Amino acid sequence: MVRVVIVDDHAILRRGLSQIIDESDALQMVGEAENSTQALQMLRKTPCEVVVLDISLPDRNGIETLKLIRKEFPKLRVLMLSMHPDNQYALRALKAGASGYLTKQSAPAQLVSAIVQVSRGRKYVTPGVAEELANSIGDDGVESPHHKLSIREYQTLCHIASGKSLTEIGQKMAISVKTVSVYRSRILEKMHMKHNAELTHYAIKNNIVE
Image 1: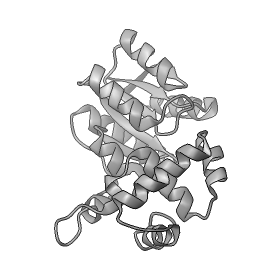
Image 2 (image 1 turned 180 degrees about the horizontal axis):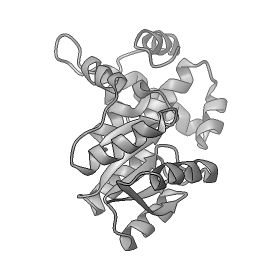
Image 3 (image 1 turned 120 degrees about the vertical axis):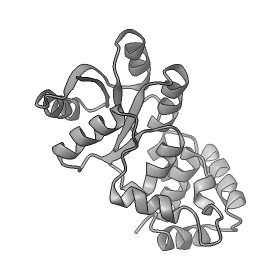
């Protein structure tokens, strides 16, 4: 029996995930948390094999939470769950130590299979994630520029490429306009570009935004 802890800030989604897990003879729901802080506190007192972790949490993003979990509980398997498409955060999650990545639109049976698979020490990736892994390295063996960005820089890139202003981005990410400007400068420097139009063109060409 694989013991599972769910971390997601939406109560309705947690309830739905719990029902899926309870219906499986192979899984046992042993706890849930609605943010990063609660998750770490729970894991310190609740033995489990797999953590199903939302990538978007109110107090700390999922990638940062993942890194903290991996540092404190290196044997725990973490399956990232996200509302974002595979191509946006899957590779970053796997590089940060996730055992798998699944979107919230996935079928219940897929969730059960993913949890069981990662509990056995194997990686779980969908065909879309596998393709993204292959595409992350160019034909010349060099890593794609956007994969060098931090999670916050990548989020900023997505917002810029979607046409949002610095003020709108700041509101979306709950940070100051000045901080958004700093992220934008870092993005341009790391990707060797000069202005937003280049970033937008790159994002569309690489299917980061449509």
